[in-house]
Image 1: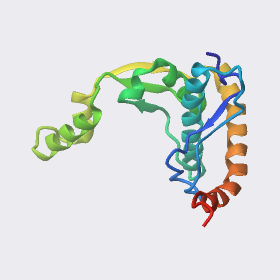
Image 2: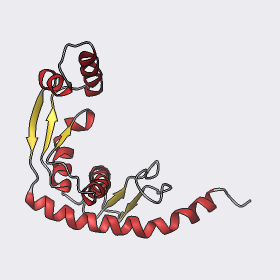
Image 3: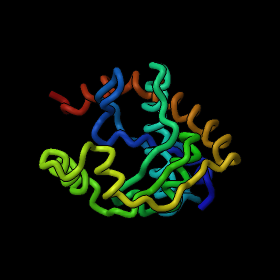
Image 4: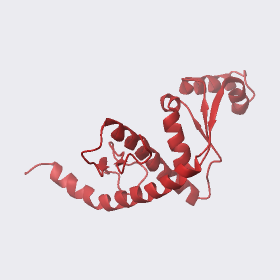
Length: 174
């Protein structure tokens, strides 16, 4: 499936948006045509989640903070496609972990620091977490996703005006 899902965008706000002025945002597919199949929808969902996360990362950047790289863990980190999409969308290298249950690993590190097994969290991570492949941003995809994210942002802003009206209609005729 090509990048951009042949003109299909997905706003991934199935449970609203938590880091925005409109917490009642809605999910939507934009640009859906008869030619689009399951693979298009799948790719659009992966890209839409990446674009939404990129919106949040830009807010960090506006505050003078921006990571030099991302670390991916858990289920999504097992998808090379999604890591490639996110690396290009964020224009950041992404380092995956080999550990599958990083939440449990983190709890173990916290307990290890508390019990004196590790001197600090950094040494606990060094001794426990195993890193996998580093995914670098593809410059061709990065530039393309930058243009896609501009359209994504425009769609989000223009749709925001409709969410309150949709909420009012959701109650039904009474």
